[in-house]
Image 1 (cartoon, rainbow, N blue to C red):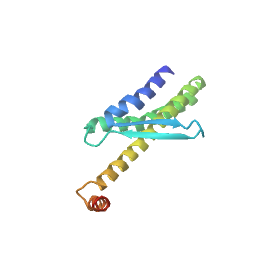
Image 2: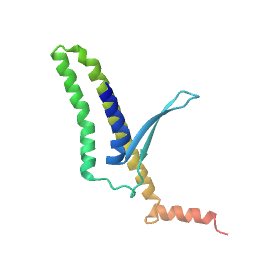
Image 3: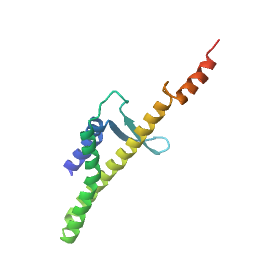
Image 4: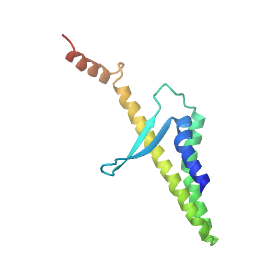
Length: 138
């Protein structure tokens, strides 16, 4: 159980940030009790992501839940039900990490796309610059 917690923490806070430049966490509003997921990605151009590291990270993220499902099936067929709670906890933690990093990746891609849409080298950036410039002219 401690190794599962350490793996979850390391993947969520250290490996995700170092290998793919992504991080996520969950915040709870104290007044309403609503839960909100927060996604963080490194700024484009500030961190060079190695394609091999990125492929390994994503492959591990998607293969790990499959391995835990296979272990659950093996435990059921061998009548070793004592291992099922551990396998279920591991499955929940790995699926949560996989879903959160997938959402963080989509958020990062959407942020990068929106940021590039307003850069000065394209039509949207030119239009936005001209509109803002008109407000500040004397």
